[in-house]
Image (cartoon, rainbow over all chains, first blue to last red; front, side, top):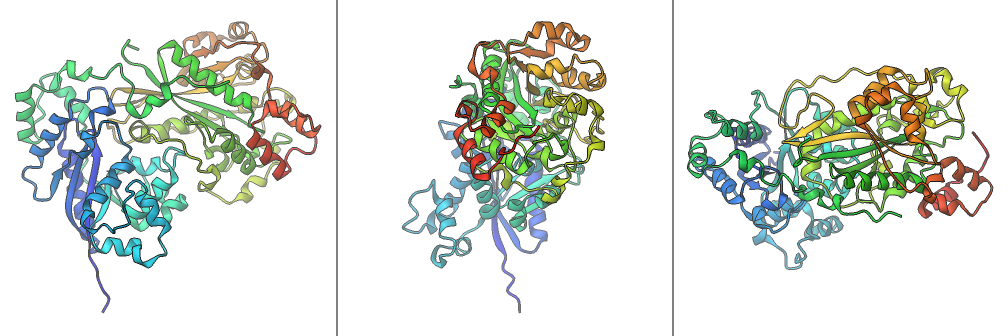
Length: 275
Length: 307
């Protein structure tokens, strides 16, 4: 009899969550249904990781509020949680680093004695790939698989030359896994097929089609709030109450960071050292 | 544009890059510095887009080599990258279609670009997937696709070949989200992102030659997108602008980079580089970066006179 092993999965979603909306929550539900339907996965946990204030995006309100709204939104969920590690970091972090951190957290109990250098953790594992003692496969048996939950644009961005480090793509797609939520009209399968790197790991890329047309955008929610319009049924009730009590999302809050360059781009605005 | 919102810009440069020279890199750096100094722009990326092999210019080495050399030239840059899309298409692409391709791609991945930009990578571009096999690039002699003017004006700037631009169908995006935009500017949650064509004054000059460019194409390139011009070889850009009604019409979309006209980089060219290589002229080290020179020697490129 074939051994049908069901892999435990944790879904990680990164983003501003400014504010969290029903669309964000639906993404988790869709991803979980999809993975369960394959018969190979059991999603045991979902993690919402709001970006830190150091990201400096215009209109990004304090992480403390965004965290609290996300917690309120998931208060009734028995599997989705909110994590504040990323938001507590003093500097903005690349997605790959956040994924790595959460993976290590999940496997903290399983750490081998020699896996001390956490930054090179992924690389070390690849080097040791053929070594049965610390093989990737064996590692995963001991703990859940961490998958990055994202939109199809992330997948497509992998094909943009030099936007991501190749080793980060290989790590995210090869070692962790990707769950992409996509809408009708985009064709993520084409990107996967056209890329050798992605095709090698295509079993680790799960494309989930969103069958309900879901246009809820945090930008539009903020705009509606500024104008005093209702956002009921777009955002959970208790989040709406919190926004009202705390008087979040005014015209003033939207201007926050408007003169500041987005953190990942700050290095581009330093004077160049050309001849 | 309000005082508090700058335009985020990606500079796109199309050309033969046969080979890519220090002058090309200088062009990118000068353009970025200048745009930043105006206080209105933030340059978040530069794209080198070498032309497809079927462009057919005599002496054009294989795209495989040109891409590799471009990658070597930008490998230490943290903002300029090489895009092989043009080279991987079935046939050569017009400037319009390249701009539109990148705009459409940026539309879809703006969020990723703005939220997840990495430190520079030395990942070779030619490791990227190809849509078809290499053999497609060998059809250099397909002259019937080339506009007549190119054959006649062969000595002038390589950009002249774009004149027979047929505008491709605009893709229809069936949904609107926070990353969407329905024009040529992309907006990602209030961040405006534009793609500007970066070029030398020779391209600007080519706009003035009657009949060389279709008016509708110039309207797209200058009107919808915008150009950043780095003058070279002592060109008089004011005079050039005055000679074309389209350039005058869209002069607000044209940025002329004020640079030191006596800068040694302004006289560097791919043609001079090829000649220097053919004649064993040591000045080639002034024109090309060392990794590129090494590659050329190893691959035995540009040995014979051509073009």
